[in-house]
Amino acid sequence: MTTAIDLAADVAAGRVRPEQAVDDALARISARDSDVGAFVRVRADAARAEAAALSRRTDLGSLPLAGVPIAIKDNVAVAGEPMTIGSRATVRDPQPADHAIVSRLTAAGAVVVGITAVPELCLFGATDSPDRITRNPWNRNLTAGGSSGGSAAAVASGQVLLAHGNDGLGSIRIPAADCGLFGIKPGSGVVPPQGGGNGWYGMAENGPLATTVADAGLMLAVMADDMSLATAATGSNASALRIVVADNFPLAIGSTDPHWAATLTAASQVAAEIGHHISAADLPYPTNPAPLMLRWVGGAAADADDIAGQGGDLRKLQKRSRRHTALGRVVNRRGLVTEQQKSATVARVERYLDTAGADVAMTPMLARPPIDAARWSERGWLANMYANIGYAPFAGLINLLGWPAMSVPFGVHPASKTPMAVQVFGRPGSEATLLGLAAQIEQARPWPRIAPGFDGL
Image (cartoon, rainbow, N blue to C red; front, side, top):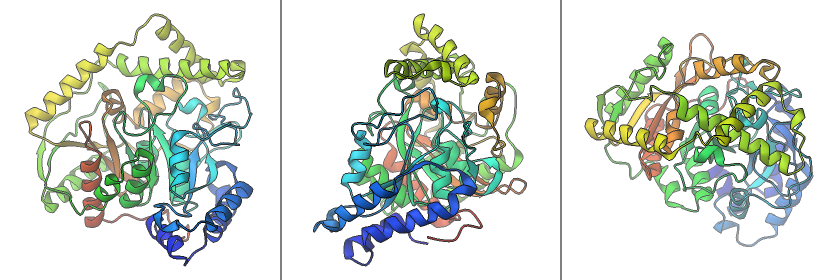
């Protein structure tokens, strides 16, 4: 199975034409996506035209993603395509211009072959809508995660090598963990934000989903306009780190599945074998969930108001989304989101790392296997909240901090037959450090590149 890096090299050297790379991806989408429901739109004609334009260029060797087919999540603009954000409430007018990250990716030679599914307004950790249920390529009875579930399913089923995601409360890392991919959420200010709304009060960031650390690092480097991140993702310059391992559960009620807990132990042991220094200490998760909850609902309300301002019809929102955004309007109207909520949490976590003498922290990525692939969009708000918080409680703290974090595949759950993973996060500016560590773990314990039953690329 090839990588995005290898495919770009083949295109640059003339061994593969961009048109062939795109046609191959379109053929895989046609053959495989009915099984998983990753794509909401396929850009066959536009992608072929863009590939043909690439073929006429004489500078393919200078393009780091030359001819690589990619997928873009349905909440950033792709010129000429509607952006629905998984909702019937949005208008269907074609977007007039590419989002900044799409411009950067296509300028680097990537070709957008399709737009991937999201839950409505990207609110939840499972991806479904009245039109489709996005399924986990490893176990079609379970979700591919959310909100970047379509992107994760597209990569894990081998339809594309790279996909864009974004992450406001784990929406890159959760589907990456569900589907056995490497995903990284950069820290604030590294990659251009989504635009519109308020970015969930600054918690949401754009990032990559890929089968290898090096591919993800290259995509992130292009999105961030910082090619040093691609070098870091090779692991060649990685140095010994001090890693503090936190196995405590973030919530007052609940626990981590024993297999997911054992994965954390095993991954930390591998890190020690590589040469990193391991300690253990409970992470000071907030005892008051309000700072996260307020930003979650308030950010959703801002997104809904943005949709209304563009001519959308909020009466068409799903029942769960109407409840979520109604709460958010109260939050926004009363000014309940404050900077002090964030700064107090940042101070606590900084003290934690300082006390432990740690560069980065490692936690479980999820508390248990993916939830069912079902029509969660038809269920009530409380049912969705209970299901989402119960299986993915570890991610949100890092969004509140605004720090970088990644999901690194490690093992397969014996009951669900879906991948497991660990989360690693660090202080602002530690993206290169995280990528280097992930590359070392990948080299020590390689993971399956795509789900069983899907042929290689």
